[in-house]
Length: 348
Image (cartoon, rainbow, N blue to C red):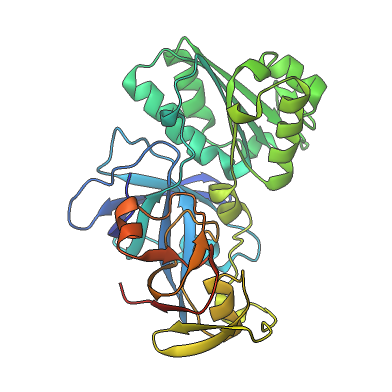
């Protein structure tokens, strides 16, 4: 799906756990928000004194495009996610861009899948699972979710219902700890090769989609590799989890970045900035005190799109630009690296 600028209105919110809320949005103009299961949106959040771009994976299914949902954990110290929990109410309108990202089982035709998530990394997996359910797919799917405690397992009732509805689906949940007063009959403890052999014994033969904190994904990847899985069939996504679990994007205005040594010149809207070969447009602008709105920082969301007016850059992105936008001269400031003097415009 090609990313586009959107104006979204919040039409509902639902408390999932003590610190997780699902927000529902409609496009203000009434158009459906078309996307693939597992893709994401970049949201411009009107925080006090600034507009902060943050990226979130879509939790809802593409088969119901009139309403799009994101599920957000209020991260400790996360100003953006905390603002969403406290101030984002039905009727609020925000600017967005999307959908973005290539993390989707819709691109793959495998006989068996494993959807493996940790914490808020469950959101793209729910989009994929809901999509499969709505389409009546009978593909073999294992849905493995890891949470801190039983109280932190998201969408537990819906997962149980989908497990009953879909004969080819198997739901497996694991928690790290069971506090006093909480009951749990499932797996518990750290996921390692031994516990994985009990939960998903045929992991290596499956097309695996994994999302969660970096350490979690690395651990699952090592298990997959040790079991003989092919690297090309292991897909990871930190996009949604990083932005909701850690609220990881630092506002550029307060980021501490050393100024580069003089060498090249970057011109942005007529202003000149010193730069070095291989430096990104975003980093050079940041070092010079210019804020370019950014979301994922990984070339996926398209928030930092600027138009190149002259010069050469090297750029490898992850779906944040359409082929048409590239032909029109747009680049992504976060991943466009300078090969010489470059001039860009931030005008859309």
